[in-house]
Amino acid sequence: MTEAGAGALREILVVLVLALVGLLLAVLAAFAPWYATPADAGGGAVVEMHSPQRAGPGTGSVAVEAR
Image (cartoon, rainbow, N blue to C red):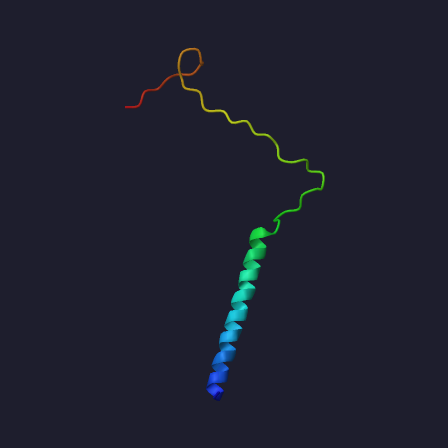
């Protein structure tokens, strides 16, 4: 192998190692917990969803028609 070929191989290896390190950091950032939670958190809170009321008789609001 010539001197230029050894340098090119070394450069490719450096690029591959840096790419693998970047991939490892991306995986760690994606799957690591982003905030600390207490050990006795007890799970998530329940959230109730309510749809908006339509204006009409008995609702106390005024119906506005679109023009």
